[in-house]
Image 1 (cartoon, rainbow, N blue to C red):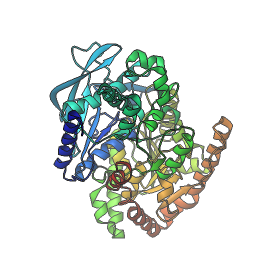
Image 2: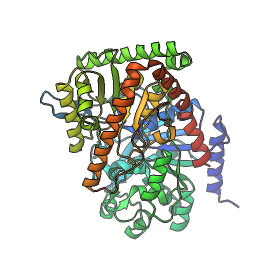
Image 3: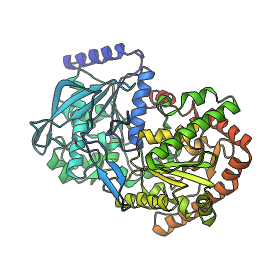
Image 4: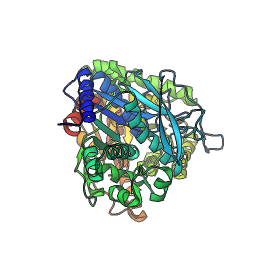
Length: 560
């Protein structure tokens, strides 16, 4: 016979499932540090947030039983510009949340032995499934700016934010009467939710082993970048001081996340299933975490995008007609050229090849690779035969990333008729570029790109990908038919500077070859083939790499 409290819990969970239009599916709480839901709300920094926002919109359209859980960032992510001296400047301003309602309810979490009040906000606007945000900006909180800036701090404040997200997220769902069947951690930031579930089960009388096993059955995990900075770790002394240990000893925490406590390792061990965000990424992640025991194999579920947000509906309607397709593309290109002129004063040429590149300014993404691709490429840029529009942001504390932005900005000043840098990269810029360019360039160091969904957006808009075979592109690329691959599948022999420099030099040669000998001649001398490639790009990518398909795979492979 079930204990009364557990029987009540089971009845509530059953009731929750019955209220869903897809009543046979488990209900899911999707915890993430960032959500890109609209360009006006800076609750996102990059691809992690873009995925999370698209996930909630896809869940709404597909009637999936999903609730998002995040933080109400008062100042969001940085607004980044380049000043008159060519130096990157970060600014933070308060953002309105007019489409979110204060539920009038709150929860408390313990941080540094002090109770911190977290107000609960919610919204179903922007065409998304319900999103719950926690907010520490309360007059009774001594630490009211914990939810001040997205990724604004490290150390103590980062742990504090992760306590609010994980511990506060579980409590907020319970306070609102929600008992999800599954907790989905989108990246390791949310793993403290599992420790909170363990704590609650131990308070109900379970042993630690029993609580861990029961919690594991409730949780799943999506791992993202294989870059070290994307897999946070914290000293045990810090977790104990902050209260993030939730009653666990250093030895017990070590068994979960190692020493120092690694959030990704903990998530791998405290979840029943883990997915990577592309098939190649799954192989990379498996190798990266091969020595971690007590975990499930990492499966590949390739990301998808929300077409309503990113894809021009009119171009999809005319993709069967070469003439109408090209006409619509030219209209979108003209819109982008007007957008660029409004933002920068630069007038690009409608008839010249236009390349787009927009990424976080991280070294492994090699935003500046085209400038190292040789004299002939530089001559083509100088002559305007190739035009390129860049956009991107560096993390406020990433000096290397800022140097990349500043280098691109300098090229935009010395080659201002053909090289453009759009400042303060956001969803609006991303949408304009992936609709209006002729070519979408992506040249990360393989295999460090987890997925790269911007290429999917471009492809669905008829913009041809020219990309390193990394992330999602090895799955989709039909070289010379729906886009082009840069080089081959070879990677650097090691992570030593000499090996990395060799890989960069090699890939730069491949990039020059593809641009000068395939892309440029096709664009200027074989427009029929170019349009056929646009059609093939749209045909091969649109359905397979949609968020609808991704959600189907989540419920089939991750949530079952």
